[in-house]
Amino acid sequence: MSFNNLGFGTISPGQTQRWWYSFGGTDRGAQYCMADPLNPGGSLQVNDQTKVRNNDGTITYWVSIINIGSVTTNFSLSGGGLS
Image 1 (cartoon, rainbow, N blue to C red):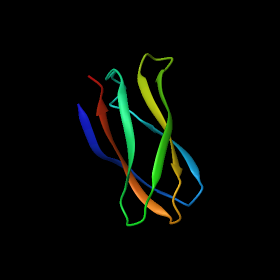
Image 2: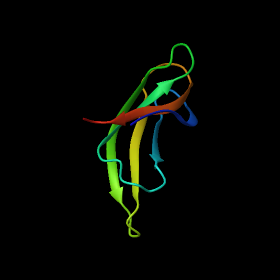
Image 3: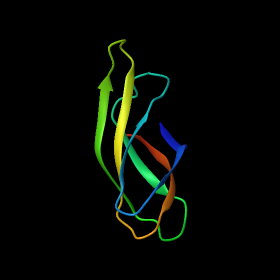
Image 4: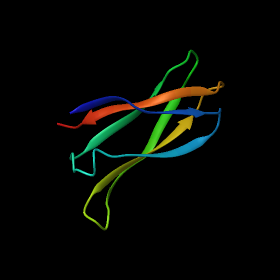
């Protein structure tokens, strides 16, 4: 299942942010997440995609977002399952 416009953030040039996302704690299997630049000149890279089973059995997904461009960039998360 794909997802778009999940969350909203702003990231400065050279900055790295760690973001989490969840689907109500349910396990959606392997998920790929991309930071979707929302303004001209935005150039974002994602790394360190992580899936965590929490102590209560729920699942949380994590991703690191790096602004490799030269402008402050607004973004949302998009992605989906691997098949």
